[in-house]
Amino acid sequence: MEQPAAISLPPGTTAGRTPLRDRLTIPVLAFGGILMAVMQTVVVPLLPDLPRLTGASAGAVSWMVTATLLSGAVLTPVLGRAGDMYGKRRVLMAALGLMTAGSVVCALSSDIGVLITARALQGAASAVVPLSISILRDELPPERRGGAVALMSSTVGIGAALGLPLAALIVQYADWHTMFWVTSGLGLLGVGAVAWAVRESPVREPGRFDVPGALGLAAGLVCLLLGVSQGGTWGWASGRILGLFAAAVTALALWWWHQLRVARPLVDLRLVSRPRVGLSHVAALLTGFAFYANSLVTAQLVQAPRSTGYGLGLSIVQTGLCLLPSGVIMLLLSPVSARISAARGPRVTLAVGAGVIALGYVVRIADSRDLWMVIVGASVVGVGTTLAYSALPTLILRAVPAGQTASANGVNVLMRTIGQAACSAVVAAVLVHHTSVVGGIALPALHGYLLAFGIAGVVALVACTAALCIPADPAPEAPARAASAGASLDGAMEQA
Image (cartoon, rainbow, N blue to C red; front, side, top):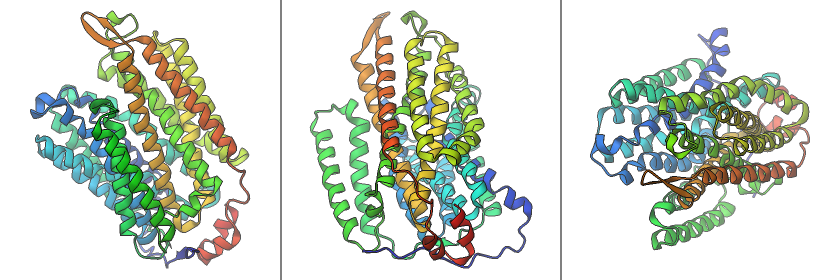
Protein backbone atom coordinates (compact mmCIF):
# COMPACT_ATOMS: atom_id res chain seq x y z
CA MET A 1 0.00 0.00 0.00
CA GLU A 2 1.37 3.42 -0.90
CA GLN A 3 2.23 5.60 2.05
CA PRO A 4 0.94 9.17 2.09
CA ALA A 5 3.48 11.77 1.15
CA ALA A 6 5.01 13.90 3.82
CA ILE A 7 3.27 17.21 4.32
CA SER A 8 4.69 20.58 5.19
CA LEU A 9 2.81 22.31 7.95
CA PRO A 10 2.93 26.07 8.32
CA PRO A 11 6.03 26.79 10.35
CA GLY A 12 5.61 28.29 13.77
CA THR A 13 6.11 31.95 14.35
CA THR A 14 9.64 33.24 14.01
CA ALA A 15 8.90 36.34 16.07
CA GLY A 16 11.69 36.97 18.51
CA ARG A 17 14.13 34.76 16.65
CA THR A 18 17.54 36.25 16.00
CA PRO A 19 20.46 35.24 13.77
CA LEU A 20 22.20 34.10 16.95
CA ARG A 21 19.50 31.48 17.60
CA ASP A 22 19.78 30.20 14.05
CA ARG A 23 23.58 29.99 14.28
CA LEU A 24 23.34 28.07 17.54
CA THR A 25 20.95 25.40 16.23
CA ILE A 26 23.75 23.03 15.21
CA PRO A 27 25.84 23.49 18.41
CA VAL A 28 22.74 23.01 20.58
CA LEU A 29 21.75 19.79 18.81
CA ALA A 30 25.37 18.56 18.99
CA PHE A 31 25.38 19.31 22.72
CA GLY A 32 22.31 17.12 23.08
CA GLY A 33 24.05 14.27 21.26
CA ILE A 34 27.17 14.57 23.42
CA LEU A 35 25.01 14.68 26.54
CA MET A 36 23.24 11.48 25.47
CA ALA A 37 26.57 9.66 25.04
CA VAL A 38 27.88 11.01 28.35
CA MET A 39 24.72 9.76 30.08
CA GLN A 40 25.30 6.27 28.74
CA THR A 41 28.94 6.26 29.87
CA VAL A 42 28.94 7.90 33.30
CA VAL A 43 27.70 4.85 35.18
CA VAL A 44 30.67 2.71 34.08
CA PRO A 45 33.15 3.92 36.75
CA LEU A 46 30.52 3.22 39.41
CA LEU A 47 29.89 -0.42 38.56
CA PRO A 48 32.64 -1.97 40.73
CA ASP A 49 31.50 -0.01 43.81
CA LEU A 50 27.72 -0.03 43.36
CA PRO A 51 27.16 -3.38 45.13
CA ARG A 52 28.74 -1.89 48.26
CA LEU A 53 27.01 1.48 47.85
CA THR A 54 23.52 0.07 47.25
CA GLY A 55 23.65 -3.25 49.11
CA ALA A 56 22.71 -5.08 45.91
CA SER A 57 24.36 -8.00 44.14
CA ALA A 58 26.73 -7.51 41.21
CA GLY A 59 24.13 -9.13 38.94
CA ALA A 60 21.48 -6.63 40.01
CA VAL A 61 23.86 -3.72 39.53
CA SER A 62 24.61 -4.80 35.96
CA TRP A 63 20.98 -4.01 35.14
CA MET A 64 21.80 -0.32 35.42
CA VAL A 65 23.50 -0.78 32.07
CA THR A 66 21.15 -3.40 30.64
CA ALA A 67 17.99 -1.39 31.43
CA THR A 68 19.31 1.63 29.50
CA LEU A 69 20.30 -0.57 26.57
CA LEU A 70 16.88 -2.25 26.39
CA SER A 71 14.80 0.90 26.78
CA GLY A 72 16.97 2.79 24.29
CA ALA A 73 16.62 0.04 21.70
CA VAL A 74 12.83 0.04 22.07
CA LEU A 75 12.29 3.79 22.33
CA THR A 76 14.62 4.95 19.55
CA PRO A 77 12.46 3.79 16.59
CA VAL A 78 9.25 4.56 18.51
CA LEU A 79 10.25 8.14 19.32
CA GLY A 80 11.63 8.55 15.81
CA ARG A 81 8.25 7.67 14.34
CA ALA A 82 6.52 9.94 16.86
CA GLY A 83 8.81 12.77 15.82
CA ASP A 84 7.91 12.30 12.15
CA MET A 85 4.22 12.45 13.05
CA TYR A 86 3.92 14.97 15.90
CA GLY A 87 6.99 17.20 15.63
CA LYS A 88 10.68 16.37 15.96
CA ARG A 89 11.58 19.27 18.27
CA ARG A 90 8.72 18.40 20.61
CA VAL A 91 9.74 14.74 20.84
CA LEU A 92 13.44 15.69 21.13
CA MET A 93 12.64 17.84 24.17
CA ALA A 94 10.59 14.99 25.65
CA ALA A 95 13.51 12.56 25.19
CA LEU A 96 15.94 14.95 26.87
CA GLY A 97 13.35 15.57 29.60
CA LEU A 98 13.05 11.84 30.35
CA MET A 99 16.82 11.57 30.47
CA THR A 100 17.00 14.47 32.92
CA ALA A 101 14.21 13.05 35.07
CA GLY A 102 16.11 9.77 35.27
CA SER A 103 19.25 11.61 36.39
CA VAL A 104 17.33 13.43 39.13
CA VAL A 105 15.88 10.15 40.41
CA CYS A 106 19.35 8.55 40.44
CA ALA A 107 20.69 11.55 42.36
CA LEU A 108 17.99 11.20 45.03
CA SER A 109 18.05 7.43 45.58
CA SER A 110 20.38 4.57 46.54
CA ASP A 111 17.78 1.82 46.07
CA ILE A 112 18.83 -0.47 43.24
CA GLY A 113 15.26 -0.98 41.98
CA VAL A 114 14.69 2.77 41.75
CA LEU A 115 18.09 3.26 40.10
CA ILE A 116 17.36 0.63 37.45
CA THR A 117 13.98 2.22 36.70
CA ALA A 118 15.59 5.64 36.42
CA ARG A 119 18.26 4.31 34.06
CA ALA A 120 15.50 2.84 31.89
CA LEU A 121 14.00 6.34 31.67
CA GLN A 122 17.38 7.64 30.52
CA GLY A 123 17.32 5.20 27.61
CA ALA A 124 14.92 7.59 25.86
CA ALA A 125 17.94 9.81 25.14
CA SER A 126 19.06 7.29 22.50
CA ALA A 127 16.54 8.94 20.16
CA VAL A 128 18.28 12.33 20.40
CA VAL A 129 20.72 11.77 17.53
CA PRO A 130 18.25 10.48 14.89
CA LEU A 131 15.73 13.19 15.79
CA SER A 132 18.42 15.87 15.57
CA ILE A 133 19.67 14.60 12.21
CA SER A 134 16.13 14.74 10.88
CA ILE A 135 15.76 18.33 12.12
CA LEU A 136 18.99 19.27 10.36
CA ARG A 137 17.70 17.82 7.11
CA ASP A 138 14.51 19.81 7.34
CA GLU A 139 16.04 23.10 8.44
CA LEU A 140 19.46 23.48 6.80
CA PRO A 141 20.33 24.34 3.20
CA PRO A 142 22.08 21.53 1.30
CA GLU A 143 25.52 23.15 1.46
CA ARG A 144 25.50 23.08 5.28
CA ARG A 145 23.65 19.82 5.80
CA GLY A 146 26.47 17.32 5.18
CA GLY A 147 28.89 18.81 7.71
CA ALA A 148 26.17 19.23 10.32
CA VAL A 149 24.99 15.63 9.98
CA ALA A 150 28.60 14.38 10.19
CA LEU A 151 29.15 16.38 13.38
CA MET A 152 25.90 15.08 14.85
CA SER A 153 26.91 11.49 14.15
CA SER A 154 30.31 12.04 15.73
CA THR A 155 28.80 13.22 19.02
CA VAL A 156 28.29 9.57 20.00
CA GLY A 157 32.03 8.95 20.15
CA ILE A 158 32.87 12.41 21.47
CA GLY A 159 30.47 12.09 24.39
CA ALA A 160 31.63 8.57 25.23
CA ALA A 161 35.27 9.70 25.26
CA LEU A 162 34.46 12.68 27.48
CA GLY A 163 32.05 10.89 29.79
CA LEU A 164 34.38 8.23 31.15
CA PRO A 165 37.14 10.46 32.56
CA LEU A 166 34.62 13.08 33.72
CA ALA A 167 32.60 10.52 35.65
CA ALA A 168 35.73 8.89 37.05
CA LEU A 169 36.98 12.22 38.38
CA ILE A 170 33.64 13.01 40.02
CA VAL A 171 33.38 9.55 41.57
CA GLN A 172 36.98 9.73 42.83
CA TYR A 173 36.68 13.13 44.51
CA ALA A 174 32.98 13.49 45.40
CA ASP A 175 29.92 11.52 46.51
CA TRP A 176 28.65 9.33 43.68
CA HIS A 177 25.26 11.05 43.69
CA THR A 178 27.05 14.23 42.61
CA MET A 179 27.64 12.70 39.19
CA PHE A 180 23.89 12.41 38.61
CA TRP A 181 23.27 15.95 39.88
CA VAL A 182 25.80 17.14 37.29
CA THR A 183 24.06 15.25 34.48
CA SER A 184 20.70 16.56 35.74
CA GLY A 185 21.93 20.13 35.44
CA LEU A 186 23.35 19.48 31.99
CA GLY A 187 20.07 17.86 30.96
CA LEU A 188 18.04 20.88 32.06
CA LEU A 189 20.46 23.09 30.14
CA GLY A 190 19.98 20.91 27.06
CA VAL A 191 16.17 21.06 27.23
CA GLY A 192 16.24 24.82 27.66
CA ALA A 193 18.73 25.30 24.84
CA VAL A 194 16.63 23.22 22.42
CA ALA A 195 13.50 25.17 23.38
CA TRP A 196 15.32 28.45 22.73
CA ALA A 197 17.44 27.74 19.65
CA VAL A 198 15.71 25.00 17.61
CA ARG A 199 12.68 25.56 15.42
CA GLU A 200 9.93 23.00 15.13
CA SER A 201 10.32 21.21 11.82
CA PRO A 202 7.35 21.80 9.49
CA VAL A 203 7.72 18.40 7.76
CA ARG A 204 5.31 15.79 9.10
CA GLU A 205 4.18 12.29 8.12
CA PRO A 206 0.42 12.12 8.69
CA GLY A 207 -1.39 9.10 10.09
CA ARG A 208 -2.30 7.26 13.27
CA PHE A 209 0.44 5.97 15.55
CA ASP A 210 0.89 2.18 15.25
CA VAL A 211 0.46 1.13 18.90
CA PRO A 212 0.36 -2.66 18.19
CA GLY A 213 3.51 -2.27 16.10
CA ALA A 214 5.29 -0.43 18.92
CA LEU A 215 4.29 -3.08 21.47
CA GLY A 216 5.30 -5.93 19.16
CA LEU A 217 8.68 -4.35 18.41
CA ALA A 218 9.24 -3.73 22.13
CA ALA A 219 8.48 -7.35 23.01
CA GLY A 220 10.74 -8.73 20.29
CA LEU A 221 13.67 -6.42 21.03
CA VAL A 222 13.51 -6.91 24.79
CA CYS A 223 13.61 -10.69 24.37
CA LEU A 224 16.40 -10.51 21.79
CA LEU A 225 18.67 -8.06 23.61
CA LEU A 226 18.01 -9.58 27.01
CA GLY A 227 19.09 -12.95 25.65
CA VAL A 228 22.20 -11.50 24.02
CA SER A 229 23.23 -9.44 27.06
CA GLN A 230 22.58 -12.15 29.66
CA GLY A 231 23.68 -15.23 27.69
CA GLY A 232 27.13 -15.29 29.23
CA THR A 233 25.71 -15.02 32.75
CA TRP A 234 22.74 -17.37 32.49
CA GLY A 235 24.35 -19.84 30.07
CA TRP A 236 23.79 -19.81 26.30
CA ALA A 237 22.17 -23.26 26.39
CA SER A 238 19.99 -22.52 29.42
CA GLY A 239 16.23 -22.74 29.15
CA ARG A 240 15.82 -19.03 29.90
CA ILE A 241 18.11 -17.91 27.09
CA LEU A 242 16.69 -20.36 24.53
CA GLY A 243 13.18 -19.35 25.55
CA LEU A 244 14.03 -15.65 25.13
CA PHE A 245 15.45 -16.24 21.64
CA ALA A 246 12.40 -18.31 20.65
CA ALA A 247 10.09 -15.58 21.96
CA ALA A 248 12.11 -12.94 20.09
CA VAL A 249 11.85 -14.81 16.78
CA THR A 250 8.11 -15.33 17.26
CA ALA A 251 7.39 -11.75 18.33
CA LEU A 252 9.47 -10.17 15.56
CA ALA A 253 7.98 -12.47 12.91
CA LEU A 254 4.46 -11.46 13.98
CA TRP A 255 5.56 -7.82 14.11
CA TRP A 256 6.97 -8.06 10.57
CA TRP A 257 3.70 -9.60 9.34
CA HIS A 258 1.73 -6.81 11.01
CA GLN A 259 3.95 -4.05 9.59
CA LEU A 260 3.40 -5.28 6.03
CA ARG A 261 -0.38 -5.19 6.44
CA VAL A 262 -1.11 -2.10 8.48
CA ALA A 263 -1.85 1.13 6.63
CA ARG A 264 0.39 3.30 8.84
CA PRO A 265 3.29 1.09 10.01
CA LEU A 266 5.70 2.02 12.76
CA VAL A 267 8.56 1.03 10.42
CA ASP A 268 7.99 1.05 6.67
CA LEU A 269 9.47 -2.33 5.77
CA ARG A 270 9.05 -1.57 2.08
CA LEU A 271 11.79 0.99 2.53
CA VAL A 272 13.93 -1.50 4.46
CA SER A 273 13.64 -3.98 1.60
CA ARG A 274 15.31 -1.49 -0.75
CA PRO A 275 19.02 -2.32 -1.05
CA ARG A 276 20.11 1.27 -0.35
CA VAL A 277 18.24 1.25 2.98
CA GLY A 278 18.52 -2.40 4.00
CA LEU A 279 22.26 -2.67 3.31
CA SER A 280 22.81 0.59 5.19
CA HIS A 281 21.13 -0.98 8.23
CA VAL A 282 23.27 -4.12 7.87
CA ALA A 283 26.40 -1.96 7.66
CA ALA A 284 25.25 -0.05 10.77
CA LEU A 285 24.91 -3.29 12.75
CA LEU A 286 28.35 -4.51 11.67
CA THR A 287 29.99 -1.12 12.27
CA GLY A 288 28.43 -0.90 15.73
CA PHE A 289 29.95 -4.30 16.55
CA ALA A 290 33.38 -3.37 15.20
CA PHE A 291 33.49 0.05 16.87
CA TYR A 292 32.39 -1.11 20.31
CA ALA A 293 35.19 -3.64 20.72
CA ASN A 294 37.72 -0.80 20.71
CA SER A 295 36.54 0.92 23.90
CA LEU A 296 35.27 -2.28 25.55
CA VAL A 297 38.50 -4.27 25.21
CA THR A 298 40.88 -1.33 25.63
CA ALA A 299 39.33 -0.33 28.96
CA GLN A 300 39.89 -3.83 30.35
CA LEU A 301 43.32 -4.37 28.84
CA VAL A 302 45.01 -1.21 30.13
CA GLN A 303 43.56 -1.71 33.63
CA ALA A 304 44.87 -5.28 33.89
CA PRO A 305 47.60 -5.67 36.56
CA ARG A 306 51.20 -5.34 35.44
CA SER A 307 51.79 -8.82 36.84
CA THR A 308 49.94 -10.25 33.83
CA GLY A 309 52.90 -9.28 31.63
CA TYR A 310 50.76 -7.15 29.31
CA GLY A 311 48.56 -5.02 31.58
CA LEU A 312 49.41 -1.42 32.39
CA GLY A 313 47.63 -1.23 35.74
CA LEU A 314 45.96 2.10 34.91
CA SER A 315 43.20 3.66 36.99
CA ILE A 316 39.77 4.32 35.55
CA VAL A 317 40.64 8.03 35.19
CA GLN A 318 43.84 7.20 33.31
CA THR A 319 41.88 4.76 31.14
CA GLY A 320 39.42 7.47 30.21
CA LEU A 321 42.28 9.78 29.28
CA CYS A 322 43.68 7.04 27.00
CA LEU A 323 40.38 6.99 25.09
CA LEU A 324 40.05 10.79 25.03
CA PRO A 325 42.17 11.28 21.87
CA SER A 326 39.65 9.18 19.93
CA GLY A 327 36.88 11.60 20.91
CA VAL A 328 38.97 14.62 19.90
CA ILE A 329 39.73 12.98 16.55
CA MET A 330 36.04 12.34 15.92
CA LEU A 331 35.31 16.02 16.54
CA LEU A 332 38.08 17.24 14.25
CA LEU A 333 37.46 14.77 11.43
CA SER A 334 33.69 15.20 11.08
CA PRO A 335 34.08 18.03 8.48
CA VAL A 336 36.56 15.89 6.54
CA SER A 337 34.14 12.97 6.40
CA ALA A 338 31.42 15.31 5.13
CA ARG A 339 33.71 16.49 2.32
CA ILE A 340 34.50 12.92 1.30
CA SER A 341 30.79 12.10 1.20
CA ALA A 342 30.09 15.19 -0.89
CA ALA A 343 32.87 14.34 -3.35
CA ARG A 344 32.63 10.54 -3.55
CA GLY A 345 29.29 9.64 -2.00
CA PRO A 346 28.48 8.40 1.49
CA ARG A 347 28.78 4.72 0.60
CA VAL A 348 32.44 5.27 -0.31
CA THR A 349 32.96 7.12 2.98
CA LEU A 350 31.32 4.23 4.83
CA ALA A 351 33.49 1.65 3.05
CA VAL A 352 36.67 3.62 3.72
CA GLY A 353 35.67 4.09 7.36
CA ALA A 354 35.08 0.37 7.87
CA GLY A 355 38.41 -0.39 6.20
CA VAL A 356 40.20 2.04 8.51
CA ILE A 357 38.56 0.40 11.54
CA ALA A 358 39.97 -2.94 10.36
CA LEU A 359 43.39 -1.30 9.95
CA GLY A 360 43.15 0.01 13.51
CA TYR A 361 42.68 -3.52 14.80
CA VAL A 362 45.74 -4.65 12.84
CA VAL A 363 47.68 -2.04 14.83
CA ARG A 364 46.11 -3.29 18.06
CA ILE A 365 47.08 -6.89 17.31
CA ALA A 366 50.63 -5.84 16.32
CA ASP A 367 51.28 -4.14 19.69
CA SER A 368 48.96 -3.86 22.67
CA ARG A 369 51.66 -3.72 25.37
CA ASP A 370 52.99 -0.16 24.94
CA LEU A 371 50.71 2.67 26.00
CA TRP A 372 51.52 4.89 23.04
CA MET A 373 50.69 2.08 20.60
CA VAL A 374 47.43 1.40 22.44
CA ILE A 375 46.50 5.07 22.00
CA VAL A 376 47.56 5.04 18.33
CA GLY A 377 45.55 1.91 17.57
CA ALA A 378 42.48 3.19 19.40
CA SER A 379 42.78 6.51 17.56
CA VAL A 380 42.93 4.79 14.17
CA VAL A 381 39.74 2.93 15.04
CA GLY A 382 38.29 6.31 16.06
CA VAL A 383 39.16 7.75 12.63
CA GLY A 384 37.35 4.90 10.90
CA THR A 385 34.37 5.20 13.21
CA THR A 386 34.08 8.91 12.42
CA LEU A 387 33.99 8.24 8.69
CA ALA A 388 31.53 5.35 8.98
CA TYR A 389 29.16 6.93 11.49
CA SER A 390 29.00 10.20 9.57
CA ALA A 391 28.15 8.39 6.34
CA LEU A 392 25.34 6.18 7.70
CA PRO A 393 22.74 8.92 8.37
CA THR A 394 23.57 10.58 5.06
CA LEU A 395 22.84 7.30 3.27
CA ILE A 396 19.50 7.09 5.05
CA LEU A 397 18.61 10.74 4.36
CA ARG A 398 19.19 10.22 0.65
CA ALA A 399 17.17 7.01 0.48
CA VAL A 400 13.93 7.73 2.37
CA PRO A 401 11.11 10.28 2.02
CA ALA A 402 11.45 13.51 3.98
CA GLY A 403 8.60 12.59 6.31
CA GLN A 404 10.27 9.35 7.48
CA THR A 405 13.81 10.49 8.21
CA ALA A 406 13.56 10.38 12.01
CA SER A 407 12.03 6.91 12.13
CA ALA A 408 14.44 5.54 9.49
CA ASN A 409 17.47 6.97 11.29
CA GLY A 410 16.01 5.60 14.52
CA VAL A 411 16.06 2.11 13.02
CA ASN A 412 19.64 2.70 11.87
CA VAL A 413 20.69 3.68 15.40
CA LEU A 414 18.81 0.61 16.68
CA MET A 415 20.93 -1.60 14.42
CA ARG A 416 24.09 -0.04 15.86
CA THR A 417 22.77 -0.78 19.35
CA ILE A 418 22.12 -4.42 18.47
CA GLY A 419 25.64 -4.63 17.03
CA GLN A 420 27.13 -3.22 20.23
CA ALA A 421 25.12 -5.66 22.36
CA ALA A 422 26.31 -8.56 20.21
CA CYS A 423 29.90 -7.31 20.48
CA SER A 424 29.65 -7.16 24.27
CA ALA A 425 28.40 -10.76 24.38
CA VAL A 426 31.08 -12.03 21.99
CA VAL A 427 33.92 -10.24 23.76
CA ALA A 428 32.76 -11.54 27.14
CA ALA A 429 32.59 -15.10 25.79
CA VAL A 430 36.07 -14.84 24.23
CA LEU A 431 37.69 -13.45 27.37
CA VAL A 432 36.01 -16.02 29.62
CA HIS A 433 37.37 -18.89 27.51
CA HIS A 434 40.91 -17.49 27.24
CA THR A 435 42.27 -16.93 30.73
CA SER A 436 45.48 -17.39 32.64
CA VAL A 437 46.05 -17.61 36.40
CA VAL A 438 47.98 -14.67 37.86
CA GLY A 439 48.53 -14.60 41.61
CA GLY A 440 45.87 -17.25 42.08
CA ILE A 441 43.29 -15.24 40.15
CA ALA A 442 41.99 -16.15 36.68
CA LEU A 443 42.38 -13.13 34.38
CA PRO A 444 41.87 -12.78 30.61
CA ALA A 445 44.98 -13.78 28.68
CA LEU A 446 46.58 -11.48 26.12
CA HIS A 447 45.70 -13.81 23.27
CA GLY A 448 42.04 -13.53 24.31
CA TYR A 449 42.19 -9.76 23.86
CA LEU A 450 43.98 -10.15 20.53
CA LEU A 451 41.37 -12.65 19.36
CA ALA A 452 38.63 -10.14 20.23
CA PHE A 453 40.46 -7.50 18.19
CA GLY A 454 40.75 -9.96 15.30
CA ILE A 455 37.03 -10.74 15.36
CA ALA A 456 36.18 -7.03 15.38
CA GLY A 457 38.57 -6.44 12.47
CA VAL A 458 36.94 -9.20 10.40
CA VAL A 459 33.49 -7.78 11.14
CA ALA A 460 34.74 -4.36 10.00
CA LEU A 461 35.86 -5.89 6.68
CA VAL A 462 32.41 -7.46 6.26
CA ALA A 463 30.91 -4.01 6.93
CA CYS A 464 33.19 -2.60 4.22
CA THR A 465 31.92 -5.24 1.79
CA ALA A 466 28.31 -4.45 2.68
CA ALA A 467 28.98 -0.75 2.06
CA LEU A 468 30.43 -1.42 -1.38
CA CYS A 469 27.31 -3.46 -2.24
CA ILE A 470 25.02 -0.47 -1.59
CA PRO A 471 23.78 0.86 -4.94
CA ALA A 472 25.25 4.20 -5.92
CA ASP A 473 23.05 7.22 -5.39
CA PRO A 474 20.95 8.70 -8.11
CA ALA A 475 19.91 12.23 -7.29
CA PRO A 476 19.65 12.27 -3.50
CA GLU A 477 16.00 13.26 -3.62
CA ALA A 478 13.57 13.20 -6.48
CA PRO A 479 12.00 16.53 -7.39
CA ALA A 480 8.54 15.01 -7.01
CA ARG A 481 9.28 14.05 -3.45
CA ALA A 482 10.60 17.51 -2.71
CA ALA A 483 7.40 18.96 -4.10
CA SER A 484 5.34 16.80 -1.78
CA ALA A 485 7.31 18.11 1.17
CA GLY A 486 5.90 21.56 0.55
CA ALA A 487 6.75 24.58 -1.48
CA SER A 488 8.79 26.00 1.36
CA LEU A 489 11.33 23.16 0.99
CA ASP A 490 11.31 22.68 -2.80
CA GLY A 491 14.58 24.41 -3.57
CA ALA A 492 16.51 22.78 -0.78
CA MET A 493 15.26 19.27 -1.56
CA GLU A 494 16.07 19.53 -5.26
CA GLN A 495 19.61 20.66 -4.53
CA ALA A 496 20.17 17.86 -1.98
